[in-house]
Length: 140
Length: 433
Image 1 (tube, one colour):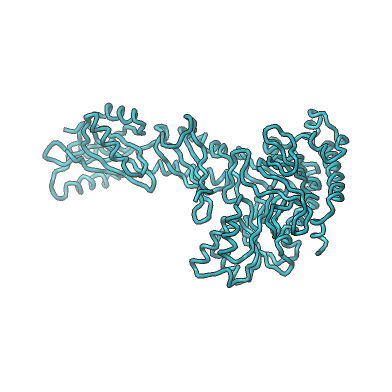
Image 2: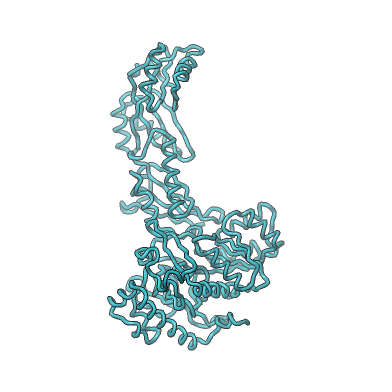
């Protein structure tokens, strides 16, 4: 069920994010969602893009270190308390969220949240699905 | 002038006779007692009796740092191990330290030459000497300590680091002499300024600074900012430790205590002995040491020797301040570091070699080491935590094996400067304004 995201290593310096987005833009690849984790000297950029294989190829060709990983994409109704409900289900099952971010362009009426569960991915997806959440295998 | 300083002004002809006699005893001892030298002499086709003049030393084999490593830890002793009363070590090139051993008599000679070093800068038994070199396996702390005790000073064995406490003791104890690395003392000056302490308001009057190369400009800066007189001291653990040579008030080269440490200057490429005044690699032979005497030890330090009598009255040969080396060794906060040591730390970590670079800078007069490591797909992870684990692991291993705290920076591949396709391993930016 999981979807693929691309993680990219970036030095914490001017213009690195611009470079990455330009490379993808020039290759005609759309960015659907993103999140940045930053430390003092480096950052990790997580991207959801249209064509993962093509995106990774263009980045690698330009010397940018990246890798795929699998994350969980879940539809969340755009109303108060719906995210809390999803997180509550996970908490009750003892599943930890490593990080999460929203999809900028969900392609439908509902919001889409991306969760990174590490090794607990399959278990978490099952828990969310059983609680009535729509777990996506691709973005609309 | 007391008995010890007389030794510094000895007639050079008499000195040469003493040196020859001691050298002859040393080569005999080495040939008879140390299998490594027996073999080395035989391979060169020389016998101890071939040393008839000082110039004959050129026929004898040299010793290099790797010889010490190959005979780690105690393979080069010339006495039974129970005659050894002290062991020191410095970091080696493969993680194994370079070990040196001293008999009771060796320690006494070391204390004597260190004592003469302090006297050269005008210290007397009335002084209080604060030792700001590290104690432990490093020779700096204990070397200076016993020399100062020999002179009859009050010794404060403070050790390295703890700037605030150093300043507190200088003020409260009335310390008159400080011994530490020059960069650490400049750091002390800056910290003192911050808390409104002027060394001119303390009793501090002399500083002996060594264990790392520094310039005449730094000496002037220290003197201007602190009002104390600053002296350079030189030493290396393989030969003895601090106090192999030292600065006098003329500051025109460091007087080598030649009655114990015999110097030569070699062409680093041809190994030929060069005449006085020519620039080359300085090489030392210990001529009174018993525990672990070394013959023609290659320092890789580039210097010149001047035999004319100094204006201070001393006849001991003067070596010029070390400005460069003939190999890629760096000296950072008194610690010797070869880039290959860093490589040996990184080697077991998949994906980090050969993509690394050492950047040495001097911030607030303290040497800083940064190790930049390129992140390759092999080590990259989506998790910040695992990259930080990697960074901490590298920093920990460097600290464990080399003894230096380094800042580890993860950088993108291809960003480290390369010259002619080969990674540029070291960027030493310390002598840039």
